Structure formats: C-alpha cells, structure tokens
Image (tube, rainbow, N blue to C red):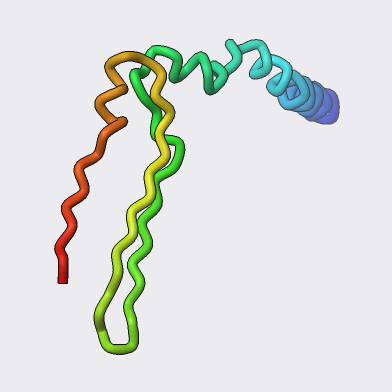
Amino acid sequence: MLLRIVYVIVSILLTVTTLSPALAATKEPDPTWDEKYRDEPYVFLKKERVIKINKDYTFSDTIYKKASIQKEEGKSLGEIKIDCVNA
C-alpha cells in the first residue's frame, strides 16, 4: 500500500515537472524591439563615456551618444551646443 502511494506521488510530480514548461510557453510572447519603442520620439542606441587619466594627472573626458530619431519631437536632439574653451 505504501509503495503504491509513493508511486502515485512520484508520477504526479513527474507529470507536473514535464508539463510546466509547456504551460509556461502558452504565455503571450514578448514584444519585439520595434514594437516596444515604436511610439518613442527618439531612442538612444548607445551611450558611452571614456575618461582617460594621463601620467601628469590631467584627464580627457569623451562622451559618445548615438540616437535614432523616430518622430518630429525627437528632432530636438539633432543640434547639440558644444562649449569650447580655447587655451
């Protein structure tokens, strides 16, 4: 009798573990990148900052940004004011 109960419990556990991935696959698929960001005026594709420290303890700071402008509202990113200090 005890062996039969153990057999039933093990078979139920095996059934649940084998069916759980199949049940998880029935959820709605994640949206694609285009679907997720379609309504955004712009999307930053890359943001990178490099700070280089020289041997004389001076440094240079470089900022690199790449954006995809998708709508009219995003065109404000097209012009960037750069302040230059002449030495």
